[in-house]
Length: 160
Image 1 (cartoon, rainbow, N blue to C red):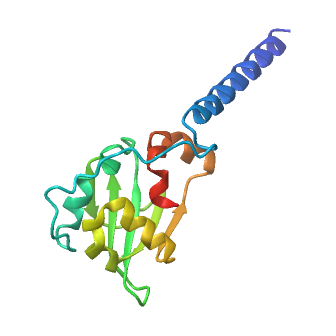
Image 2 (cartoon, rainbow, N blue to C red):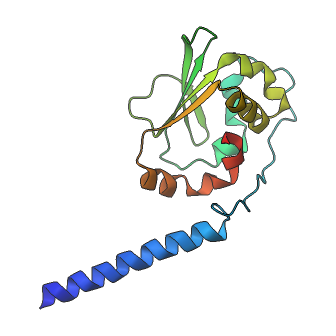
């Protein structure tokens, strides 16, 4: 009898958590298209972005500052021949040149877009995506990814 009551309690608790999650998502406008990009990029000091200062540029961006503490994103910069030029591990307030063993997300981007970052990170990512020169691959399951990166939803327009 106690096992049955515990099972019912846990089922109700799980249902409440799921309902709360979807109410939270709905309030942020994720599925309704209401969410807008409402962040300011720190471009004031960045007039000449190149491969040498690219990691410092990324660290200065609010989108990187807002990442979860335990995030690990692999950014692969490739050339026109699809050969990897550099790999970066991006986490909260950190960009290091290295290969990630088990990233949450792997992003592949043509390195020619580094020269266009003066137009803003978000605009540059949008352009790369439109030109099919950026790939976004989740390594986590969708539920884990959405939960872990729920605070990053304000940047979703950068990847559309």
